[in-house]
Image (cartoon, rainbow, N blue to C red; front, side):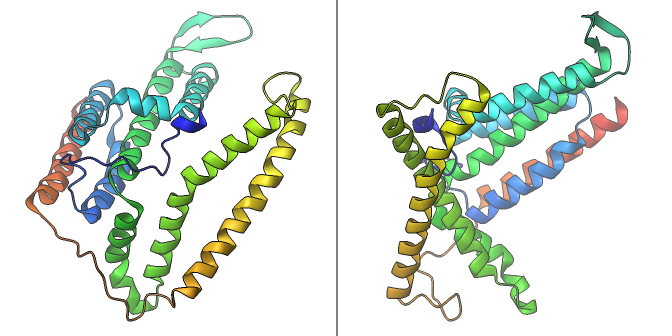
Length: 267
């Protein structure tokens, strides 16, 4: 599973989404997160799902690849579905299991919240899959530039986020190597009581944290050796360019917001 994790990974391609300006993609994702909460009925969620699937298709990334790389998140979504299904007690009773009773409103909330969560995960994953960490840094710094007038550290914040995204797959690979090394030495992390499984995680976390701190120290040393002193006075090798496709992408969000708002009012 660790080898298929897609958090923080970049998939090189020449799709329409890959060629978009990183600033447009950042605004697109943040706006989508806000717009999706306008959906409150089946038709609205169906429209949002079609919009998300169209975005995935334009990126050249398959839904199967997204699902296979987001298995831990899928487990969380399934848990959320079950939680809403059994603990929402409104509407007519659909199924009485004795200890638990499934209500009509529970099914509705379980489906809608799970769908909302799934669409958000898909859309935010597209950002890292189609944009290099360096481009995300440049785009975020450009969007935060107006805040520099109030001494907001835009460059430093963008750099920290870029480093965090870059090290997610690295730490995942490191975790996979440590797990295999522990299993080769007879450690069993997948069976036995919960208490024993928690104890088996301790030998995994200690070397992982040690390696993470060592990597952070090496990175800090490398940045100092190369003369990094913050964002003041730095020039850029990569210049961001806004194109018509970026404007059309944001305009599509305006249309989506209008349609979801209309469905919310009339249905």
